[in-house]
Image (cartoon, rainbow, N blue to C red; front, side, top):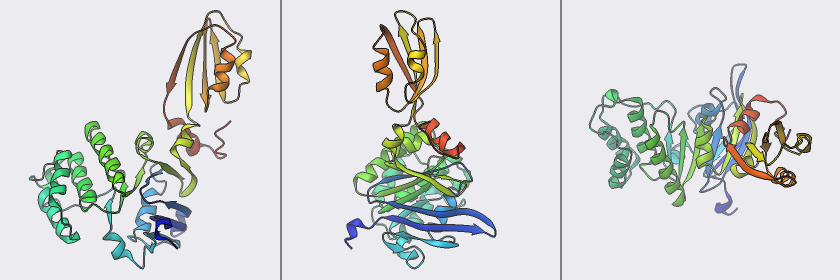
Length: 305
């Protein structure tokens, strides 16, 4: 098999149980080279357990994970030399300075470009001279991000990477992820922050209560996004003309104004509105928040309703 076609990350029926409690059940997915992949779910949905199992920090109850086409248990050491990892609860030597900690990891990993590490520290405005134990949560997170990127790995796995970062540093992180992808790196991001996943990722897997409930491209999910539309007409219009349009919800009319929520394409709404004199159209879009909430909260997952 051509190595180009081997997924960078592959889970096959990956399952982890703690006694009778199912943490993750039969997760199947593939992540391609150069992809920014989002792993999304509420806190407690099993995201961190999936990552820790895939990276051989804990052992699966059944199923398997492969990284770079290698079994994650049989080739654990080799795999870890080729990836960067930021856990959600980064274990960090608090009696070291940031510089001492990064130098230690730099030498441990056999990295060769300290200028790149220094550049990352400058980008994140990271204080490398203070003891890590005296840093704020956000400044500790900066050190964690630097160590994940510092050896320019082939794959970067991050669990809640922007936790504690201010908005300016979040934007710097987004830029770094996109630059990293441009050099061919694959990025796997676990998060519960919908705008972050929407901003960065090509595809997203959604986990709920340990079960993978969907795996789709972001652009496909955007087609299901909810848009709140307000139309102003030259004269009052009959609400019945709009009530039965596919994808239209919550139609309300008051005076010259008609308000509704539309899922997906607005083409049918626009064509219907064109029968009347339209003075203005306003649209509000909350991104994918409502789409993901539908997945989290409903059993049928039928977003077209």
